[in-house]
Length: 202
Image 1 (cartoon, one colour):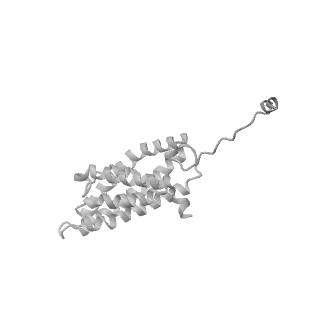
Image 2: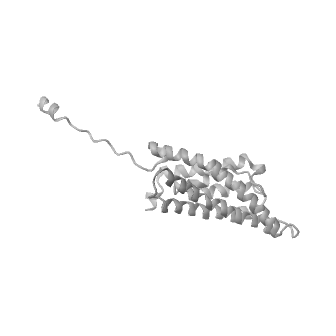
């Protein structure tokens, strides 16, 4: 079962997802950490809707990306765990809504799937910044809720504004049967022998 899940294609896809998360975060490193985070990489948190291997990929990607964080101790523990938990919830959303077909079903999956990375990051990361990384004077509930609102807005922008076009692209590629975006194996076309030709040959 383990071998069946971690196919070569899925391992490669996981590596690409993790690398993209790291690259997109480092590209915005000066503003990717702190109270107002500019992280286009968060659009990738919708990928568990399509690829289960995106769950460990996002965890590893977040872990490596956070090596550049000024809050290193917490961003190497709490941050990746929040990403992992959100990815699992997003994946389960896709599984539960798998039978819902059509554009409405796709929109519902993306809409609900994105709730988890947005809310989990908005609730947890400000708590880390305000209560664990700030001085006593700055560690107030007012500062937390201000940071919460900031994270809710920024995370929502990256997850939905960039994530929705990304999901639309993946839906399109899967519909076309592009191998890199699907796990379905190509079924060989059987060679049919024309009976009339066979009789003529005899």
